[in-house]
Length: 398
Image 1 (cartoon, rainbow, N blue to C red):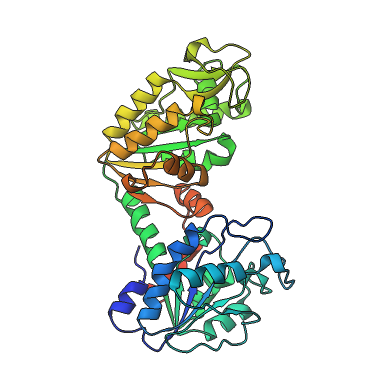
Image 2 (cartoon, rainbow, N blue to C red):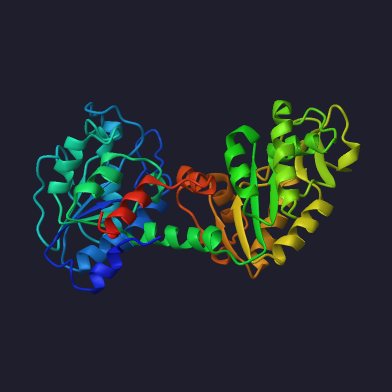
């Protein structure tokens, strides 16, 4: 995908003295007192902001935070804590500006943080009048917010339509590169891991990947539904019996291409869903009526790990068991270690996946860790994200 890259504009000396509007993703979790509890997204936004400042731009940054009601400011919706943390990371004060749609005062070499963009009436519906006002604020628009790339809003799409120059920030560009490498031009075999509680939430992803991948590993409640589709009993495990036909269709689609959906040969069961529940390893054909399947078994884990170690490309979305409980974490741990040890290019996304990566300390051994949950899932579904679409259109002269 061809897009204009902000880092190229900086390298070409085209940013000095320009008004640069950066749409970042600073939507960070906070506790009840407003204290930021995890600042990864703020830290990830710093390289783009610093590049703009170092290039001599007048820098405006904005983001959404939470789910505010448009036009109704409440203190808990304010980016004030973000401004303070961003200032600490940049080593300079970051003024917070409210009511900024009709004009912003910022000099070259300076930065301001524009208050929560979803407070602006028309933001979520991508109102054209609002988008044109935003575009008038800037000489160079930069989208560096992959987490919102699947939404066509005024600060993610409309402004890119009307700004003089529309570019991708380093975070967004890195996502485009990683996704292209993993899905558009993959090294084979291409192995995808799709896990989660329900087939229904990932059905379109499973169908899309069934047309592309060489192995489709399913885990969690999704795997239970596929076990039912394969004629196995799952006791009282989480599953969606009404989607057995859909699971069978995915299995058949893979089989028709000479590919496969590996069905677990053994599982780890418990009688109750609890951290201290007794864990029992069983053959997949021996699950009792009162059993809960909470992880794949060690034989299955090793079979899958062997496939992953031989892969050319790995796409990972979701842990394969209840890894939060140590007794049911071995499957996800084995998968994680295999991905870390593989020569494959790997791309991982989704909140639970990132938590597993952090738990097993393999951040540096995963090729690319995606920062956008919903956007990452829509990419796996085969959708074109609105933010990518408009940037590519502008790069092509549209």
